[in-house]
Length: 177
Image (cartoon, rainbow, N blue to C red; front, side):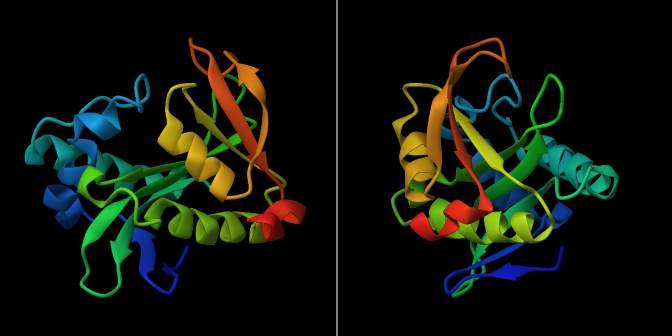
């Protein structure tokens, strides 16, 4: 995937040099608490550099359109967060959209704006539906899923060993958001 652009943001591949800025996202307990069991709080820049290196190395081997990307603000190049498209366990047939934003930048609409462009791109790659999963008390993620026009389809413990709210969007529903 080449860079994707919105009026305010650029969605691009991660780079090893993003480690310090990425730590403001993945090192923040307010973000990482919602990512377990998939990911824990990253403790320092060296650990973040290792995580980013693993993501960069894995990218070419992922089933398209899976991947992980950085979200960068166009006006000043500030890394504001990350996006991911990944296959959900256990059967790896459902694609999950995930977003993570620096806590000091919450409330600016960055997750919604960046997610919209990645959703369109994923649908252009032939994906028929995307899912977002959130813990029932993760009101910020649930709000973002709704702003994206995702439909609530129920609760499940199918993907992880906990009950999650499940949201879905299909290409025909893109105009709702």
